[in-house]
Length: 251
Length: 312
Image 1 (cartoon, rainbow over the protein chains, first blue to last red):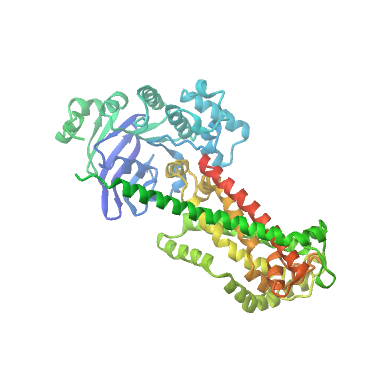
Image 2: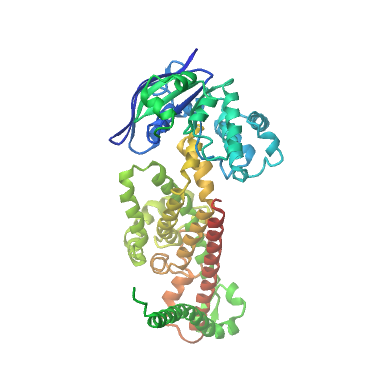
C-alpha cells in the first residue's frame, strides 16, 4: 500500500480556536478514504488543509506538514500548483453559471493557457463521459452550467476537477444536497475514480462511508480518533467513541 | 382580551394612506411642473430658432442669434471622456479594495471613497481653479504643447482653465460613484463559486477576471451610466474651471483650450439674460434634461436586468 499523502503533526486554527489537533495520518494511494465524524469535528478543515484552501479564510493558521508524494505542500510549492494537483468537489454543486457546460469542464485547464481549442473540446467531452454525464448533456453543451439538475451539476463539478488530472480528489459531502438516485450515481462514480486517483471523501452518512470507502478516518473535536480499513472500523472499532458514532448513538 | 378599537384604527390607517398618496403626488407634480415650465418658456426660442438651435455655433444676444451646438458638444464630450477615464481607475480601486486591501484599511478606504462623493462641487471648483489650474498649466499643458503641440488636439496656448481641466475635475468627481457601486457588486461574488475557481488553481486576478467581473458586468455598466449622469449635470465645478469660451470645439480642437457646457453657459448667462436669450437658455436646459432622463432611463433598465438575471 503506497502512501500518497503523509500528514504529520497537522494543527489548524481559526483565530484562537483550534480546529485540528496534531493530526497524523498516511492516506494510501488509489483508494477511497472516508472522513467521518460529528459536525464541527474538523473534517472540512482537515481536507481544506490538504489543498491549502483553509488559509484563505480570515484568521486561519496552519502548522505541520502535508507530504504529497514526499514533497511538503506547505514548503516551497506554490499554493496554485497544490490546488491543481489536489482537486476539490464541494458540498453544494457550484458550476460556473457564466460558462457553458463544456467550458465548465475545462475551466481549470483554460487558466493554464497551454491547450488549443480543439484539445479543450476533446478533453471536455472525455471528462463528461468519464463521469457518465455525456449522454445526458451532449445536446446542451452550449447551455449554462447552472441549467443542469442538481445531480448533473455535481457530476459536472467532478468532471471539472477530474479534467485537471489531479493526484488527489477531495470531496466535501458531495451528495448531501442530492436526491437518492443522484447520490447512487455519485457513489458509483467515486468507486470508479479510485482506479485513476486518490479520493478523500467527507460524509455525514456512515452507511455511505461503509459502502464506498477502503479506509475510514474518524474525527472528533479536532482530533483523529481512529484510522483503519473501513471493514475494521465498522466491524471491530478499537475506540469506544468510534463505535458509539458509527452505531448512531451520537452525532 | 379587549377588542381593538377597530373604527379608530381604520380611520387612522386611511388618513395615513391619503397622506402618503399626497406625498407621492407632489413628487410627480413637481416633475411635470418643471418639465412644463421648461417647455413653455422655451417655446419662443423653439419658434424663433427652429432646428438651427441644435446646429448653430453662434450665441449672439445682440442680434438674437442662438445656436447651442458648442455647449451641447462641450457637455457630451467632457462628460463622456471623464466617465471613460474614470472606468478603469474606478474598477481598479474596487478590485484592490475587495481582493487585496488588508481588512483593517478597508474601513478607512471606504470612508474616504464616501467622503470624496460627498464633497460639495463648489469645493472641487475652487480647488480646480486655484490649485490645479496653475499646476496643470505649467506641469502638463506647457510641456505637452512644447513637445507635440503640432498635433491640433494638443496645440497651444496653455490657459490652465480648459476643457482638459474640466475633464480632470469631472473624472475625480465620477470615480467615487463608480467605485462605490463596483465594490458593492464585486463583494457579492458568490463565495462557493469563488472557492470553485480557486480550487482549480486560479490566482486572485484570474478569479476576478473569470468570475467577479463577468458577474458584475451589467451592474458596472449601470454604475458607469450613473456616473455619466452626474458628469452631464455637474454645473458649479465645471463652470469654475472650463474657461467659458463659447466656440470650442469649432474654434479649434485643442483640449487645452477653454470651452463651455450647457450647465456652465446657463449658470453664466442666466442672470443678465432677458427676452429671447432667456428662452434660449431654457431650451438648452430642456435639452440637458432630455439627455439626463435618457441616461437615467438606460441605467435603470440595466439595473433591473442585472437583478433579474443575477449575473451579467
